[in-house]
Length: 188
Image (tube, rainbow, N blue to C red; front, side, top):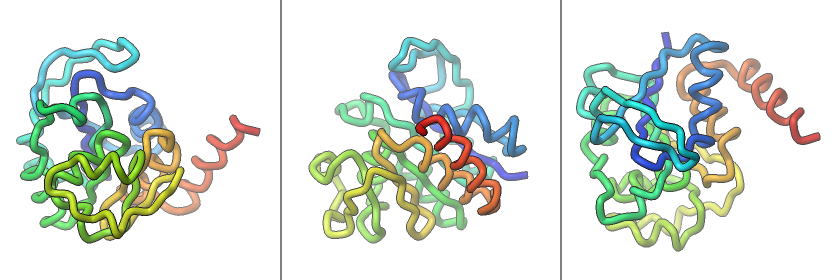
């Protein structure tokens, strides 16, 4: 069974993980689990209260196909947790890492975006992240980008982000195409 680890923080952007969490398990049979740098009860940007009991330190033992960092204001603050050990272990064992919106800052700080094509909210957004020197590989894109087991997306791209995360977890192109078609129907 495919596994996806979703990392949430206080003030997380619920629209950025909703399609992964809402359809990944129930429709596509993916084992989805939630983790936090500081487990506990906290609220999303929209006011949803949740409790995350899994610490990010146990992600490696679970060995997910993909580790997903969801955006939120903490990634833009001095209190941003260092995800480098978790992300580095994930890549070194052959897994995929993904970041959307503020989550791309965690990947940038870990040095992961220095050698792969990537996107985010804006090039200047990533330049604020210490450890980031990949500006020459930044791609201006309104959709998610996957490159060398690294998935990035601006906050406005939760659908294509979800599609790339599903692909990284082994969901086939035909099923991912159906997912994208289902989401596109909303916008006709």
